[in-house]
Amino acid sequence: MNLPDGGAWAAGSDKPEIDTIRIGFMPLADCAPVVMASVLGLDEKHGLKFQLSRELSWTGMRERLLGGELDAAHVLYGLLYGVHLGIGSRQQPMAVLMNLNQNGQNITLSRRLAAFAHDPALLERLLHEERRRLTLAHTFPTGNHAMFLYYWLAAAGIDPVADCRMVTVPPGQMASSLAAGHMDGFCAGEPWGQRALREGTGILAASSERIWPNHPGKVLGTRAGFADTHPHACRAMVAALLEAARWLDAARANREAAAEVLASPAYVNAGRELLAYCLAGRHAEGGHWRGHNGLRFFADGEASFPWLSDGMWFMTQHRRWGLLTSDPDYAAVARAVNRIDLYRAAAAQSGTPLPPGEMRSSTLIDGTVWDGSDPSAYAAAGAARARQAL
View: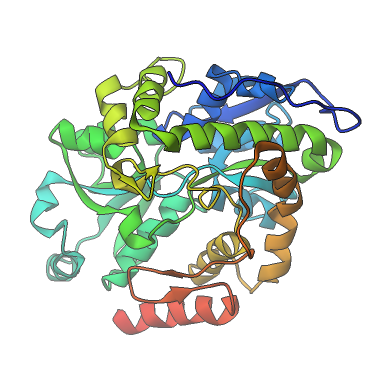
């Protein structure tokens, strides 16, 4: 492995308030920054010890995070916002400390639907002609995979509520459930879509990068109370993860080394070659490595920054699909949840560049532009487009 430069952060009055942080992670390729920060000793460099906990489901992780058994987690962006807003669980103020990855998710359909996999318009016609509903799985009702799956279906004129039966399945069970015929498809993080493809049971219908280029992925999340009580520990934790993200994007050899580590039963428990493809299966762009489906971790801090507009997008989708019954104060909520103050301090500690602003602009698969400027109108327009298409 190409280890990062040695040395330790010289802490004085800003020394971390605690020396051990319990971090939950799910067995996915994009847990790489959390795992490698620990394996490379970057946590200790910044005065901490990461105690990693492999979780089995997003629901279980949510409960352990809310109950204080975990201090922080590699967690779905949309899940964290759902908890903060009290959607489907008791409301509790939450904090996003950084973005852990961009891209790297898949919509996978069964081989029976192979002829329709790359043309959702044909799939929509099939559903209406046969008058049947698709059974599709995501990983959590307010999470990234549900919102990306809904968006992809709606862009093709398919109503995810009326035309589909949505079920929640832990990511590690997706490929086996598809193989058993329990569903017609799923949206989940890698390597589980790639496993279904290689086992001959699934077809990769759409990369999440195609739905939203360089979309946010998992975040480093915690309870707002923990961030408020332990700001120096949070800063040091983010600094260590930023260094891990930089290391992952620096060279293909680093990603291949990470794949070997993640293959262990203690982490993802999948084949080394499969994980190497997911992490290092593409090429470097602009000097930064991008894996399968554009998976990236750092990109000079662009991939790690907790953009306010990213958090606001998930709220617009929660509103669009009725998970929120009224418009929240999008900007105020995003500013409360996304702790840019702590991120900036960690960026300074780790030498990470900062972008000039806190919002960004993106063009999604249906041609709409999202920049966070008018979230209420964006949410309403999405709902209106869906009704017109249907």
